Amino acid sequence: MTTAPDRAELALAELGREAQACVACPLASSRTNVVFSAGGSGARLMFVGEGPGRDEDLAGEPFVGRSGHLLDRLIEEEIGLARRDCYIANVVKCRPPNNRDPVPEEVAACRHFLEGQVSLVAPAVVVTLGNFAARALLGTTEGVTRLRGSIHPFATGVLVPTFHPAAALRGGGLVLAQMRADFVRAKRSLGEAGVR
Ligand code: URA
Image 1: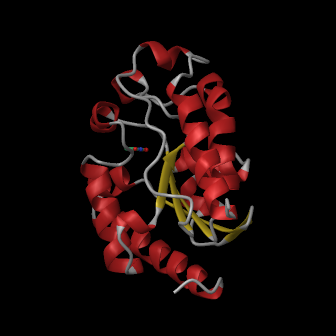
Image 2: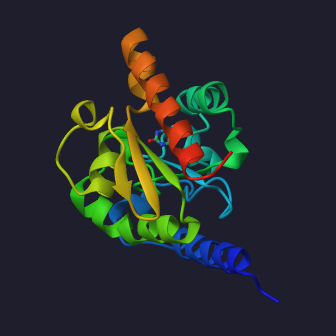
């Protein structure tokens, strides 16, 4: 018998295969790998970044470079989970050349993949990392500096906006302290949703 989680996992795998073959925007021609996700459909906590960088493009996995190492550390230190307990994705699945920001057409072409991932994983808590992810999922033009600090109702649970780890790596102490506080908010929201 196929259970509901199995069905979600199968549907995510199918969506991932679709992404691997995607040529809907010009990023397809410069990518090494499509970077679809890390983690499984059973995760109750989801992280959404902007788009793959060089390390991720080479590895085919999100957040494996310096930003990823900081993300893993914050997940462990502030939430008490491991990376493997989470579902991790990006707004765009292919690396923008020279790490430039994705353009609106690229975000729009990729949007159905992220929407599918959110609805199939059905996380209790989504943490957006940086401006792009917060704006894409909350449908706002507001920046993360204003959005963070609050918990937003979203899909099957709540959304906690925070800075991109690259901002903490560039900007130092205050940004990192604010990220830690946001991760504590995410942990509290998981608890309120009955996830321990
Ligand atoms: N930055 C992102 O936004 N996503 C990644 O996967 C890596 C770096």
